[in-house]
Each structure stands twice: as structure tokens, then as C-alpha cells.
Length: 227
Image 1: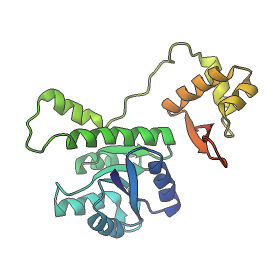
Image 2: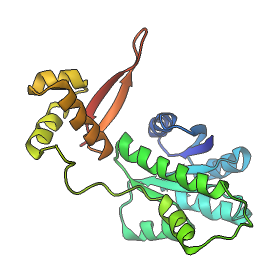
Image 3: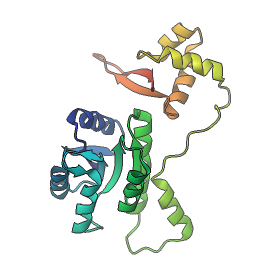
Image 4: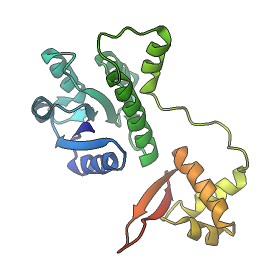
């Protein structure tokens, strides 16, 4: 399991991110912190593999956490994905310079979050599948540097999907959570067609997929548009 420390000044937001982490296979949250000081202390004590790191913290910048941990040891420092509302180029550049492996701008949906974690999981797997002394080649280096970046969303609809129907389905789930069957009933399309469009929306970050658990049986899939 990839051990994650969530760092956010708002514990409610941090709790949401922790729940998101729990939905991605191969990750577990080992702690939360809300300040630079407590984040550094928690990172040293818990030794997580990954920080989900907000920039705006009460006692400084979240990037200061990486600076302080780098002073301990670069090799021992956890990786970090910056999760923040900061959109200015200076902050983005600082995150790159301090070695963040990802940068996710708030607000975002579960799909975008899952993409970043899945990409990091692939990077983590590649690094730990071989010993540190094993030599590599340019192709493998390129693969490692690209592994932390999720694949770009397609610019055109997949074969068999149409823009008008996509807009219809997206409007149906804009204000409420619906199942594929409910979307089919609202829009007048078949359930398999509704499911195909909803799956496309989740893959492209256009919708959240939620699981509603009943008393027994498989969880119900519920969808809501992002934004």
C-alpha cells in the first residue's frame, strides 16, 4: 500500500481528500495535518510515501514542508502532489523546482483526483520494481518521467457517441445524483446507452461516480456532473 499524508488547513477538505484516497486501489491515508509544523512532524514520524499538499497553510507555504524535509534527506523525503487553489505561475514554478510530482488545482472531481493517484501508483511501481543500482536507458527514463502525468483527455468523442446526447445526459445529472436507469428514464434513451455516456463522462472528468451502499447486495452506482 502507498501511504498518504493529507495536508490541508481545512480539516473538512482534508477529510474529503482522505475519502477520495480510500476509493483508489493501493492507497491508504496514514494521517492528516493542517500546518507546516505539524505536517513536517507527521511526515518524520509516519514516513508516508506521498504527501497531498495544500499551498496555503496558516504558518507558511505547503512547499516549505518539502524544503524542510529535503533538508533531512532527499532520498527519504516523500513524494508530493500539490493540491491547491493557487493558479499563479510563480507557485506552479516553485512546486516544480522543489520536486512535486503533480499539481491539481481546486476545485476538482473524483475522476481527476483518481487519475493523479493512479499515475503516481504507476510511477511508484516502476521505481520499486527494480533495484536502485540497476542501469536504465532513455526509453525507461522517458517512461518514468511521464508516468506521473495522467493521459490527456481526448479532444473528440469516442466512436458511437454524439455531442447532443452527451449534453442531454450531462444536463440530467447536473443538479442531482442519478443511476444509469434513472438517466435513461429522464432522457428517453436506453439504459445501456445511458451507461455508455456516463462511463465516458467519468473517464473524462465530466462526472463523479459515487457508490451508494444498501442493506445488502452490490453498491448502486450514482453519477453527478462536475461543474
